[in-house]
Length: 598
Ligand SMILES: Cc1cc2nc3c(=O)[nH]c(=O)nc-3n(C[C@H](O)[C@H](O)[C@H](O)COP(=O)(O)OP(=O)(O)OC[C@H]3O[C@@H](n4cnc5c(N)ncnc54)[C@H](O)[C@@H]3O)c2cc1C
Image (cartoon, helix red, strand yellow):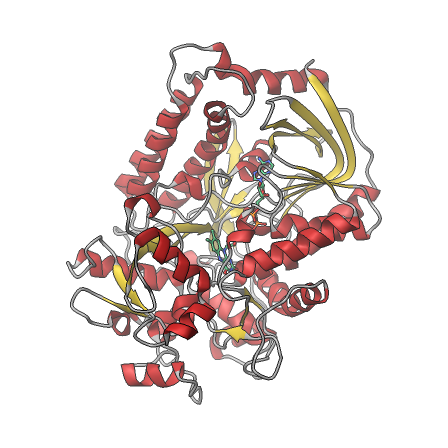
């Protein structure tokens, strides 16, 4: 047996983004030993890339804001598929989690009179995002990391977990390998929190980094957890479209939050034509009205239509391009220079200024940006208990982007960072509680040996497929057939293609040794990416309607009947199947709140 290193912890947290760090802090506060594992270096998770801000009804900029309005916005943004209890907990607890981070040293931007500032974002009734310029994630990760390390978490960096184990039905440990050496390492734990983030690397055009290969979802599924709502993948409306090398890189919604407007090749501010019925009355109808709002006149609070939810804006840009009114490189123009001074832009959006200057040679204080949809976030993920974040596998918890429920059919910007700290804390607390009642279990040596042999299989083959080619083919299939606009025919083809690629993966070979071997690392990631991609495609095929981020060209209407169920992917008789999962019934008082407001 070639495992030289073995570590035992009460709670093992896999993933060191915002959700994992907050879970680790919570478990440590219970006096337990906590191990924190991450695939890259500490501080390099997606959380650090977050730009626009964290949503919490602090009521600073508008004192009418409170959890009830935030709850309503989240449910309406999610098109009724959210787990209402998660949305309620999230809206209620987010303000405390933000103030807590401020207490731990996070320096948020201030208002002129010294209070924490909040900026407007799509789908939020009031300015609600606490932020640090357009580098909010950096400040959050710094704060959480300092606190977690200070509290005593044992951190294992550049360690990729490839398999979870259960003993007598309860999660018991995780097998990983060190990227620098390729050596295996075993972690045993009384409970485990998964905080491994999303799946964006399955698509060609994406704002996500190489770390988002869906490992957490795939490993949890293998152990018997259920995957919920995976047809809902968010295509953020504003990614860079030019030059090709940076296509997909995010352009924060903060640009529109600060007054940026979208125009087409005819110079038309087209979003006025795309306000959905359910939001009419909430958004400005003329440019003049929108400008007054940006200028600070918030009396009737009718926001510019660029601040509609992401699904609506992404589809509008796509429709403009299809109608022949796109920008030269197939997007729309996003113009902040038309509405704000160069000083203001550089102060509020410093990263965007540098990003466009350096990557596209565009000065956003004087010129419009070219933007178009990019794969950004997955609303679906592992099904969890709304209060404790426990999965269907006893002792296994999930929080952050890897988990499902809160965002339903579409996530509002800023609601991810708040999700991480609200449910990260809850997951850490519940994992700690359950750890104290559980024993460390023995993981059988033969199970370990099987997992290692499977992980090393491509080294045993020669002249097989190249993992990078499989990855490229997968990204093309997902982009073309499981992208922003879908059809039954395309999805069926995608399912066949992905299954075929799973076969190709089994025939891949890699060479060289195991230390920093990108071919082997990619092959291992592909095991997860392919599994999750199939789950996304079969979920999307089953939902025969258009709702939120899921658009079916062959079923363009939203069907009220289909609001009753979510899609659940499970393994039955060795096959992946998608079935309907009834949405928890929303209590009457909350239903009234969603429909009629506060
Ligand atoms: C460019 C960009 C801007 C964004 N801006 C905002 C914003 O302004 N507001 C907002 O609310 N949201 C924003 N988001 C979304 C938000 O940042 C993410 O949804 C969120 O940070 C996810 O946090 P997480 O803790 O779930 O995962 P992450 O922060 O991605 O952390 C995942 C962790 O899991 C580890 N990991 C993964 N697989 C394994 C494995 N097999 N073994 C070991 N470790 C593993 C990774 O190394 C990493 O440490 C943005 C996202 C992007 C990409």
